[in-house]
Length: 396
Image 1: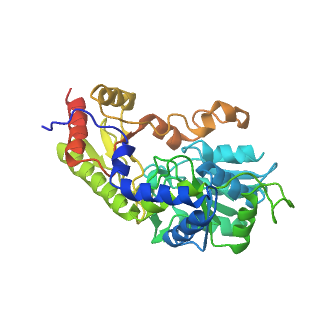
Image 2: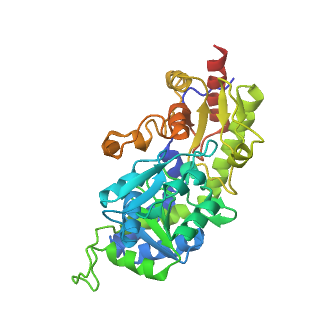
Image 3: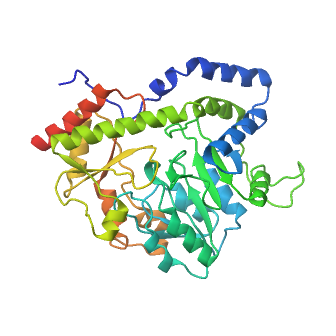
């Protein structure tokens, strides 16, 4: 038995503690510079992120949500347009489409990765479809091969929502380098988190990069001259400087997350309460299926690099997810539900006509998934404590 009595879902003070001296130096550098919005720190971060993500261009922006809005604006998305996106994702994916007057068209998810199902995209494409937004959910890339093929066939843009997935890979290609535009978030809970809101857009298209550079400063070029209406999507210099410090350690932090995930898998499978989910490809081929037990299914790695922004398990059995979460809360283990209501059933999108049963995989995921602590500074003892509580829940 461990001696741990509490495990938080996330502890940012631990994550940042070992970087305190470097972060303080970066803060002091910005303070002394007198350049607090955009400027050299943002320029350097953009160059470093471009290299890290494998894209030709990168632009710092004010948030992950604004990254999506900026990307869609640069693509000319607006009233009358449709954008296909998953229903099982964070609200900003579809909310950004809606804010521009376009219509989000929701597609179902794959059962293992929870990412958008490429086979559910094609029949939703109409003459009004302008773009597809695959989300690289929980730190694992969507199945980009068939998505990119569909986009090319129908002349559509692909906006990668990589808010949770910086550094993840699909067949060796980094998130944000495959589609027309990639969108990232520096929200503090992300693997590469700022100390407030922040984000990034990436692209290999020089014209789109220039368009987004103009749109993020109210559409002004030169300053105070506006051929288009943009927005205030600028990144603060302080956030850029602090993120640059953390970017240098990102691969080390990712390796720790991957190690933590592997320890969960070992402890929970050895205990007999869980099994690793087969991959989406195995399920589609009919060579494997998700176990129909009343216990846990652990996440699998369907793509070439999973960075584990979240460790999301599937809890089988009607109502068992909520029972397990209540039990873990009672025993001082932090958890979260990402996401309890799929977007096609959200009240604000009721006018689109979504109904229960439309997207069964997404709806089931919303009822069965639970995120466990996975941040890099978790100790083996803490992970063992979480696993002990799960085992005790099933033994009760």
